[in-house]
Image (cartoon, rainbow, N blue to C red; front, side):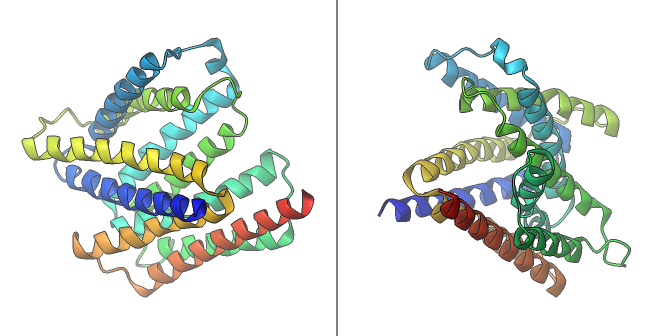
Length: 290
């Protein structure tokens, strides 16, 4: 029963994240990407900061200057800038499909930089998964859209964040890490606006509504993931993360009129299948070594 509850929390969290992405895409019609990221980062930092104060946790400590935490914040900056830009410039279904390669990138990074043991089966799954990414992006072909590379930037950045998290001191709480991450993307958003030569655009009532909804839904989604991992077994709950691509496809088709072609759908299927196989192998290896 706990596993089913955990799966339900994960399932609805992925639905919430997909809706948040949809709202960000609506905002991007009128607002610069850098402004959207900065607004979300500032509001989230204030909200999480208030929670930390309420819980009597320090907003800053010397432990937060460790290389792992600094690298994690850098990864969050790179990943957030890349993925939100991809949502704004590319079809929602395409950006979300490429993002599903993040767990494969984390497995690759863990093998290369954290000296974790990865057998030939998981190496093969990683290779096949990235072939799925190439099917979606199609570099060098007529269907290639350079904007899709921003989604790949999101994969790299969020992968760096997840890898660095494994080396974060246990004394630093999840809320403190989230606070620092949100703070980090605020100046990054400013740099992006300066680089693109964009200025602040007045926010309409509709976009304030989208922004507020995206912020609240994002918090609900984050809470759902944490609850899912605490309630159910990780090996049972984690595969439901991939339901996000299903919701993204549905929203992309029915809300934005997207029509993903055969290669995009095939690439998404290959990425998800490779990720699920990698997770299954990791679970088996840990069980055998226990």
